[in-house]
Amino acid sequence: DSESVPITTGPVILPDGTYSNAPIATETLEKNTNDDDDYEGDNEDADDIPPLKLFLKKGDYYTMTIISTCIVKLILQAIALSPLSNEAITGTPVVNGMKQEGILMLIHIIRFKNKLLISKKIDEDSKEKIMQNIEILLNLNTVEVVTETKEIYLDTTLEAFQRQFKILQTSKSILQKNSNGSCNSKLSDNSVLKDIDFAIHGTKDGKSSASSSVDSLNTATSKLAKIVQLTGFSDPVYAEACILTNQFELTLDLLIVNQTRETLKNLHLQFSSLGDVKILEQPSAINVIAHGFHRFVINCKVNSADTGVIFGNIIYDGAHGDDSKYVIMNDVHINIMDYIKKQDLKDDNKFRVMWNEFEWENKINVKTNNFKSCQDYLYKLCDYTNMEILNKNDINFDDDNDENNRFLSCNLFAKSSFGEEVLANVCIEKLPETGDIVGNVRIRSEGQGLALSLGERIAMVAKNVKKLQLEKI
Image (cartoon, rainbow, N blue to C red; front, side, top):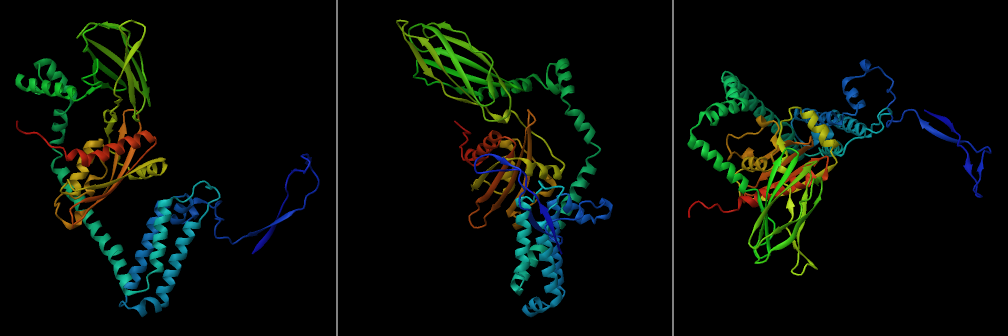
């Protein structure tokens, strides 16, 4: 079963620091030809390899986790064929043989090594799932454990599959009913036709002038929401800025007000940036009269959706011209939500591949009592992060009070204007005792800044709900 393989080493370094080519003793390596850790069929034809072994050879460990779960289900089905008792579970040779053979198969999957795919190792999630199934098979010794495991692995999963299949059939029927009016709705929502109608009639979609004025008022209100105060009211120079975004460009529209009774000479601004934000030009120096104001426009370029900060100060000459006075401005944080766009990812396999490839992960713990159901929290989360829910049909929104809707798990996806992709996994639960929604949200992206910024947005979901809304004065 073993053979001796001679190993000869090359030139060695002697104690005095010189090289030596003298003969060296030959070592012997005992190689086990029946080693279970090596795969001897690497040179086999792909047509001759069974499909399941081919998945293992290619390093598809996600399919191997599914197979491990199927092995546990088959063994549970075999145990359920006979009346449940401790003697039947532990004393039946067939059942014990199936458990031992199943455990051996799962161990071989974990220990498998492919010579052609040495760098393709089993990922931690797949290994944890297979180890969990091995532990379950080892503990199938009593009626209580078998009954509880059978309820989780067989009954609950069957109910979930039936419910998912029913939701899928319902969504297909709704799409078929609405297929006749889909073309007209898409045509009416075409932005190009809206622009043409605006050029002809003066208002979009043929609306009246009153509705047009309401749209302009909403636009002005949205601009006011983007104004950031840079200095205090008690400072000698008051400054505020309106942040305007246009694709990859960022414009700071600054207003400078001289709150003193003297003319501020040689007033100029100095800006610096942190992150992937670049200041294209620095404004020139000016003189501002007493209680006068001036407007500056600073153009910036944004290279990615990572966290960006712009900070600076106001400098002007003193009374005698021999000293300079400084007014430090507040930092301007770039809102990454202006660059995050919703996008649906229809391929689940692509989501799993990117989830394993992305290096940076940010885990946010969730605990709030400001939402009636898990679905309400999910919609608020998507609204704050501009992320799209994958496989919406799998989420049941019919009855929020249903006990089965206490748990919610789904995947989210979004893409920035710069082509950066970000993934999120939501796992939350509504506690029946207190009504709190607890769980966690895991974010993964290629860059660290994007994951941290979205994590801050998710942490703000529960905080902003608590804000009071003024309805009457």
